[in-house]
Length: 214
Image 1 (cartoon, helix red, strand yellow):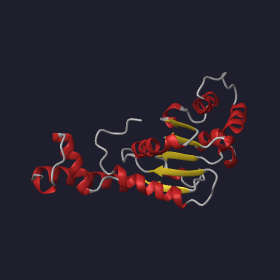
Image 2: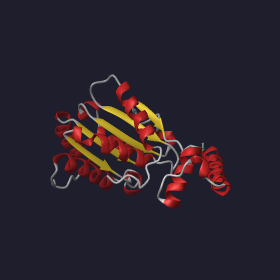
Image 3: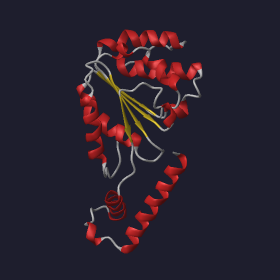
Image 4: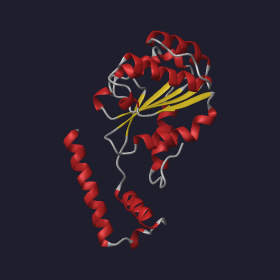
């Protein structure tokens, strides 16, 4: 998947996620939530993790914008979500799933025998995950990455690990600004006072916003 033009700070964050996954002693399904306010790069990080590991699995899929496309748990939206998962795992179209129970049965019949890597982006309701997961044993030796903005869901989804998506640091922000301005890396000492001021103002503004919604 296309990640970003300038993946500043991505490698260190992907390494953090890898360490969390490796720390999970359960040989079966491993699940991790990436959470944080909008714009900190949760989806970008999930894409980078997906790109690095999906070829090691028998099946993989990246389902994006779940929260905006599934309207507060509507039946038809949940079954469409189930269809996406099943179609990706089977790599072919299936007959329409007409109810959530039927979808769960299909998922239960397909996934335990496969080692799969699934990314569920922008989950904002618990039942969105429940329509796919059912019981942990359904997913066999698999990895599930979930990105969420709604912090109140953290204790409800039952992930093994949680990772807070953080804003770029000062040096990383300067580097990203320089790359976007000139397409080439700029040594730290060559940044102008104006560029440093711009980055400082942006970081301080984001910190104030984050504190206001925390």
